[in-house]
Length: 398
Picture 1: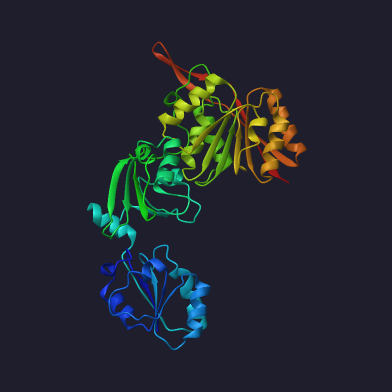
Picture 2 (picture 1 turned 90 degrees about the vertical axis):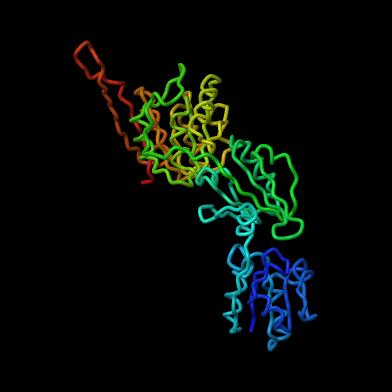
């Protein structure tokens, strides 16, 4: 029998009774050196410090008839190496049982006297992790840390994105005599140093619920910079078919109204607002803060040059190109030939340039004209006042 055992904090006291019995009954014990150094009394001396699946399988092959215990820190079902080993053992034909342990999530929750059923659980240990996207998508996020992503590193990323005021809680060496709990704001903990065995809980204020696209025009800080109007923004987001994890560009971002809408529609994605007008850049930053659009990054510069360092986009809104329509579209399609494009135009010359550029790149241009009229009081009467028509041009592969 092979027993995969969760050892919790790594101290014998955190073993379950079932786990302790299996460990003391085993003729061979395998696991990381840290765990083997804290075995309870009554265990065999036949121990080997191995933790990689291939190393474990090699050891088992030398003692196939020996009851074996394989130790894992925490719980066997929470980002554990048991997940990789278990199917390999079953394919070979070993008789296996899995015995759970206390996870670091449970240990932290118990240490601070809090329920954890509403926490979002994320591993930043040896995995690609975007803490900003995770925190924007959930008000309480638990991070398993390690490697290059320590609690301080994650808090630094949150602070850089504007989430430095989020409440942070770090648990160090949980379940051991060296256990320590530290509280503070993310920007405060970003400057501190923590033990290698640490976890992080981030809690932020609940953001307003996301509605359908098309925030009211007067919700934005505007100044004298032109802004894409509410109805056009709603239609543009529909054309772009934004998904929650998209990487998005807003070229010629103006006040950032479209950028903000994109950021709210893609909370687990990234939005890059490209703008060269200094006054507009200030407004973009103000609107970013107002709407807590912390996944929005301002790129100050003129397209297409400012696009060179950006990651490949899934979708792009073009609100202005300063006469560089063809080169901007070329830059977009060079990064991602399958990128979804939506171009806004008021002038007929811009419309013509957009259609010509899309066609030149092998795309079939589709033009939609949006005409909006709104009521305006005139004494005791209400009149419909028309806004300038706006063209939305999209391109699809033929």
